Length: 263
Image 1: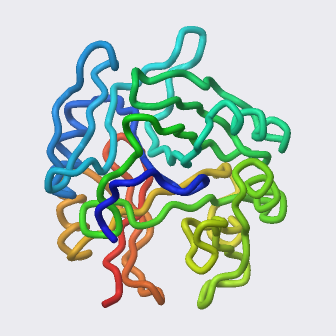
Image 2: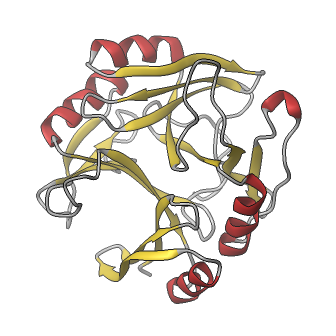
C-alpha cells in the first residue's frame, strides 16, 4: 500500500535523504522533478527539510554539514534501514564487521539515528523510530520504489545484513544470478530491497554503495525535466521485468535511479 502509517519492519528501507551542497537549489530541482513540496526546517534541526508529495513525507533534503570532528558528508542520497532499537543495531553492525561513522544520536523526539558502513564499505543509515516512522508514501510516482546495495563482495554483504539487521538475502524471480533480494522475517514472500554484484555494471573505481530509485509516471518526461534542469543521464532508459528504468545524476553529482513501473 502506498501510504505508510505504522513502523516499518526492522531492516526495511524506511527513509532516504540528501545532504545538499546547495539545499535551496536541490529542493527546487527535486521539487520540479518529482512534484515535491517542502520548506527549510527549524534551526534546531539544522534547517533539514522534509519533502512531501500529496501531503505525505517522502524524503529529506538538508544542508551539507557534519557532527563536530567529522568531515562534511558527500552530496549523495542515503538509504536508512528501520530499527526498533538503534543502539542494539549499532552493536550488531560492529559485531558483523561494519563500522559506525557517527551515532546513535537522538533527533529530538522523532527517533534515534546512526550512520554506518557495511563490511564491504557501502554506507547506509539506521533509523530507530519514535514519533516519526519514515516515509509516509512509497511505491507510487514521486516516492521511493526501491533501494539496493551494490557491492564487490556479494556473499560478504549478504552475511553482513543478515547478522546486523536480520535480513535474508536470496534469489529473486526474474533477477540475474548476481542479484539477491533482501527479505524480512515479517514478510518472507516479498523483498524489501536488494544486493547486487558490481563487477559487470560499474567501473572499478566506483566504491560499494546504496542506490535509491524513485517511481515516476512518465520516464521520458522525467528524464527531459532532469536534463533541462542541469542533470545528466548515466544509464539510458532500459526495459526490465519490473518496468522502464534510467540512471541519473543531479547537477551536484548525486546518483539515483528512476523507474516507470510495468503495469
